[in-house]
Amino acid sequence: MCRIVNFNINGCNYKLPIVGGTYYEKAINISKLRENTGFITFDPGFKNTGIVKSSISFIDGEKGILLYRGYPIEQIIKKCSFIETSYLLLNGELPNTAQLKSFSERIKEFNSINKDIHQILDKSPVFYHPMEMLSSLTCILTAFITKKDGLKEKDMYIHLLAKLPILAALTYRKKIGLPPSTSDKNLYYTSNILKMFFSVPKKYYKNDPIITDALDKLLILHADHEQNCSTTTVRLLGSAHTGLFASVSAGISALWGRLHGGANQAVIEMLENILKCGGNIRKWVERAKNKKDPFRLMGFGHRIYKNFDPRAKIVKEVAENIISELEIDDPILELAKELEEIAIQDPYFMEKKLYPNIDFYSGIIYQAIGIPKEMFTVMFALGRLPGWMAHWKEVRLNREPIGRPRQIYIGYKKRNID
Ligand code: CMC
Image (tube, rainbow, N blue to C red; front, side, top):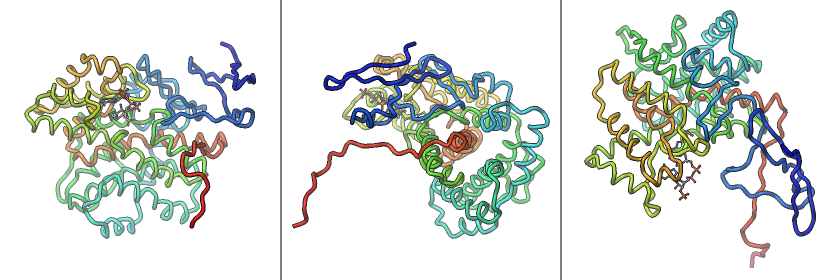
């Protein structure tokens, strides 16, 4: 591969270096472009802009490949737990037995929160969306933990892994009028999440291994996805030297958007609506193709995947498995499969390479587990947490410069107030 590109602007020749990665991704390094030529580049939505060299995850969108620290997602799903995956993303290598034990125990050590956080929830109106509450409470952890205890950086990651599920369970339980639950040190991470969500006073909660396994797999599938909107948000905050808790809180808010993590809630709402309106799938597919109609098929399309999203394939299998194991009769799953079948054979979706993404089937699993729609994106956030933290850590370790794009100003020229 050539190492330099030559180009010409208004008769002047310039040379720009080429940057390559482990695979075939190649980029023109324009970091000195403005200094040397006076030009900047224009790339709305960063569709062609690499903002970082990262070693955390790799996606080949054309081939449908996803690697975490080099390991294919299909192998991780079969051989690793969510906690091992979190260790891998944060530390670069899978843990050995002793490392895994100590990592898990340290998470358990930190799994309680300050009682005053309960009071913040008690004083909030119950019609909050769980994502806004999760984001706010994550940010305020800074005051309750970092400032109070003078926390070491390596402990911040463990604290957040321990505390985000507690905050998620609290926001859920408060909304449905259940008292706060406590974390159980005897349980594996994901079993503990389920117990914190669903235990009710004076009733023993028994984890179902089928449900724990399905949720653990979902958390793994969501754990990292290179420069998506929320991760880039977390990185940008990290580049400004904003603290970890506040950066993750911003990531949670970014994830909430319907075009990003909020799509999982939007998919189920769309499928329910289609069913309510008579189940005429073709009519909705036609609507999604009509540029004058704002309706889009939620759970379809991806910025990077122009082939099947490898995570969506696994999620579909997990959804089918849990529905059959729990003997649930779910018309939404049948509708989703029919919709997928029709859409992927439609010339519009084929031509634009629009396939189901991870959010298309994940909501069906959450519903089967008993998690309400408003909590779907919260579950996504619990899964994405190790990825966000790994990226924040990478920014700080690499001493990356503050993220600060430029713009093309199209407003008024200088004018005076009369
Ligand atoms: N239904 C109908 N048309 C679509 C869809 C869709 N779901 N997605 C993309 N298109 C069309 C779009 O109208 C555009 O057409 P044209 O070229 O004629 O203008 C073309 O496909 C390219 O789409 P785009 O919006 O320019 O692509 P993007 O990379 O900017 O957006 C996306 C990617 C995921 C936001 C988009 O596909 C979308 O809105 N999908 C639905 C929401 C969704 O499922 N989001 C979850 C994404 S995966 C998980 C995550 O990141 O959190």
